Image 1 (tube, chains in turn green, orange, brown):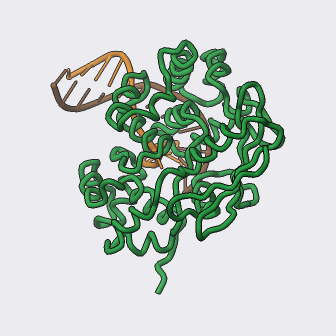
Image 2: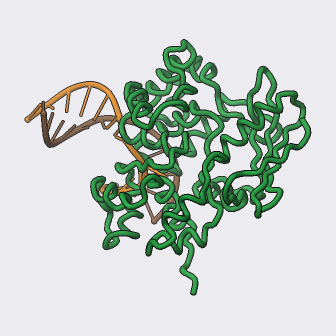
Image 3: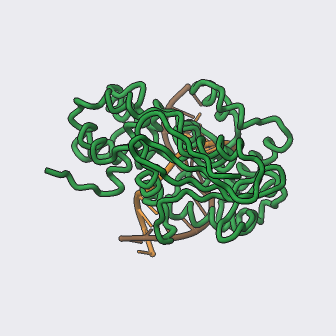
Length: 294
DNA sequence: TACCAGGTAAAAA
DNA sequence: TTTTTACATGGT
């Protein structure tokens, strides 16, 4: 496909958004302000690339070599960079806020990155239950290298088919608990037999998504909320049970001690309908260790 | 070495 | 109905 320019509504800084995402990953490859991801499209696996064409106005350039499926590439790229979210409304909401106002000024144009697929997101959620994100990432990299597909120097995340063919022992060998291995096998089987259509989640309300996710074995309230904000990019969702969120929310809104889920919910109330985006900005601000300026 | 880290289902009380 | 327990890896 040829390069396609897409103008986004509202501010967007791709390099900053990639940097923020990288701050939560252990992979220490040299940083480049380009989104590069292999994607599966009708038997082919082109590498999707997104670059920033201009900051003001926010325009991105989308391309992929060796594919005729330009429309799907563009749709997927827009999905991953959360193109439909207009940060302008969020910035207006927090412009006078004592906590968020300085944070959004330092992180202007920041948006969360969504994984290419909700299946990948669901597997991410299971791996990150209870254990540290570092340990979870190590386990996922073993899953990917065993059941995924290498495209040039990049890895395509394992398909539901590939993981459904794995044995329980294959998965525990990757470092998953027996329980979590069962969760992932169950998820993969539901997806391939069609009893679970993750794509349909995109059209559902937040509460409908919670209801559907909650019926899958291994997925509780935390996982549903985590998938809503990280996988679906729902701007008003805060996973209040999340240990990390409870910790940094206490640092920004409390006395520095970890908050309860109820306290976290209360702390983000003023930011509706952008509670999840507010949470994301604080999370990134906290992780990047940005010092207050002036 | 022990404990904690971005939970959940199942058993026990 | 509510509380307790087992679980896997990696960093400190």
